[in-house]
Length: 369
Image 1: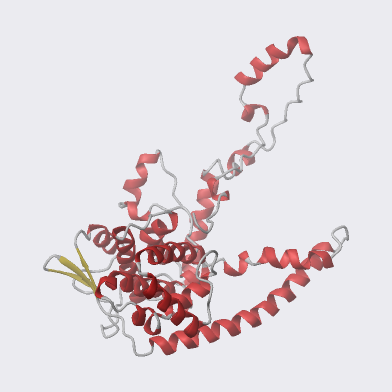
Image 2: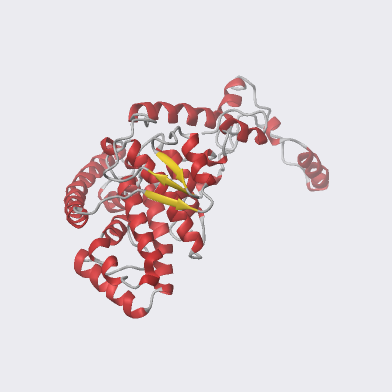
């Protein structure tokens, strides 16, 4: 997603700000899972055992979730944090846990925005995501939580990506599930048959439809609970004290006008994110179709200009080149000389149609990273 540049240092002048230096779209599922694990680990270490036991009992009663450690799916984390009005706010009444309560509220707000349907994405939700991500990132850093890849992607990358496309359409939950479905239906097909692919796809479609019915029912039940818990809750204006230069830089970068969607007041920045604030008309986030066009154009250009992903343009220009014959195996007596010649040669000159597809993107996000 980086345009063609004469040199690497020119990237800063192209984007005018380091907040937009990203190359791929962060996935809300892994983002929420990894951050939630870090937050819960911090809570377990910093909240006294009696209070933590009360919180887990309340969560079990309200949500039915008993497993809070290890690999907890993102949809469960959404319920765990979203149950705040009936769980965490009841357990964390001590004033010393005000930061913990703030972290839960912000994390729940971020999750609700990233998992909202595309039709609910507007300028207000974008502004709320910017403010909540910044405040949550700052709270985690001040609490001593390690800022790993996911915490870094939360701020500043996720708000920048949300400027182009909603989180609902970049989540990979259904795609990640496919390997489980393939493993389940694989014994029922004949891999050597002429229609092996048709057999596999037909079974995958049936399996995914059955799963959709189950997951849709589960999600509707979860949404009903979240709506009941947060029905009387209102989003307030976000107040940012201290150094807010990064936040102001992002607001200015994306066209949020000072005095209309945010303002400065006695050493703090205030965002118009309250439920009672009038709607914000600008800047308008692009539609889904516009976002697809932008992402496709940038991704295609990125692929063509990145040798580590695909040398498509070089291969196309050299496709008519005749490959030289491979050298005959050298005798033992000349092995040393042959090794010296090969070490001094360029493999790309010998085999111009080869493609080096090794890339850091192969090492994808993993829970606990």
